[in-house]
Length: 137
Image (tube, rainbow, N blue to C red; front, top):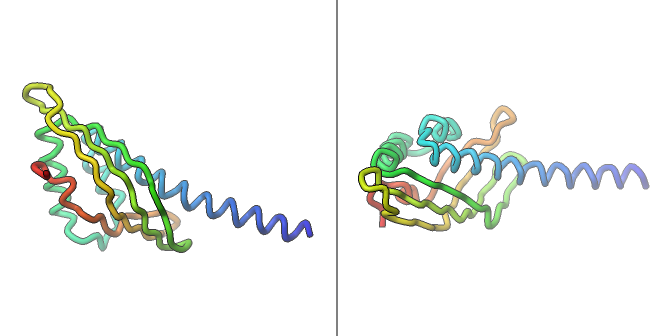
């Protein structure tokens, strides 16, 4: 009976760990974006992420034009120990660098896919990627 209880506890801890790991990756992305740390944001992408140059251009345009305040909240996360898919509510408050007024607020539910490689979670896709475009509406 004690062995079953330990296995159940370990399974619960592992599940929570995966969800926590995904939340930590997303929190790092949001923090990096708010700090204008595009390299930090992009370092969390998998090597096979589609269109990394397009995303880089969008992030550069966004952070050059605006001071960015970014936050993210996981709505759902599903998957396996090696692959996860999350629906996240991403919020951006964009303050113009020229007049310091809040120019825009964006909020959208994004689908973000993750894969675990070498014990680290990496982002394999973000949809829609256009959310991060400088002039997205």
